[in-house]
Image 1 (tube, helix red, strand yellow):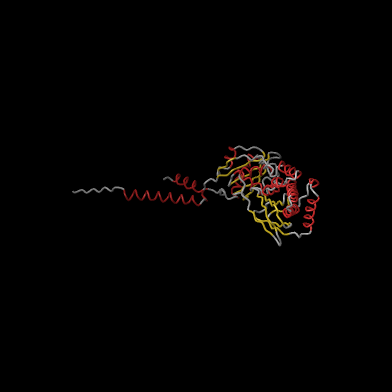
Image 2 (image 1 turned 60 degrees about the vertical axis):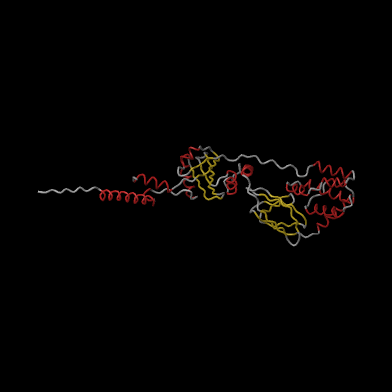
Length: 362
């Protein structure tokens, strides 16, 4: 093996090229430009997501069923009325969808039809739920009997005298918390003050699927811990498109983490290219969703791109800083190996060379 072959093979084995996805914002850059700018890496240009938000779920509490309950109440068919509004799962889902108005209507007709059927304890429980959820009595309350109005008024009065119970919500960090169909301004981990009784908690965070939980809160305190499932790439793409596509902080840590999930990219570079005012380049590198390096350069993007990408990938420890060939350790290893091979060849030649002996007589 010649010295040149040894050097090429050794140095090629020293630095395998990392594969990296690249998204470009601003001025256009071709795949060929990326290839030429960073030969030490395998850069794969991918488009930014432009996904529409998923269609909302159908209403958990169809208007038709609520209207049917009201009609059955008017007709004194209380069993049919209760059947129309008996679905607790639908009530929970409605509050998870922030449909507080229809949730209040369902609980109103539960109270009314239980009172009509002579079931006062279930009526009181439904009225207590109405108060615990802090739902306003709907306008239809004027269509029920005075007895029903009295049960509801008593529930609100009792709720007003109750002491709040601390509810500690934890799990996936920085998840937004909604309580009974309303935003709270709380992000996990945090503590809410709630009334005793049933409550619906919804947690949502970028890069995750939302989760709705129904829990019973009682004194002296309560706790809820929820780990949100990781969002599918399609959902993450819709979340990123809705929140960050036109945002000034699109290169922020939260945006880049979400974008990595949307694009299924373990290594991702977001490259911002500005041609105006002499040109400017900015780039951020994320590995497994976490930002590991940033780099900026001013000037003509075509000229500055190689230096920018080299700075970024070196800072992110994906490639090594360029050093002269003679300063690389493996260069001298290759030299030593080559010299040893040459010496061994010379020695073998002289040791194994045939020796001819001649004898003559005079």
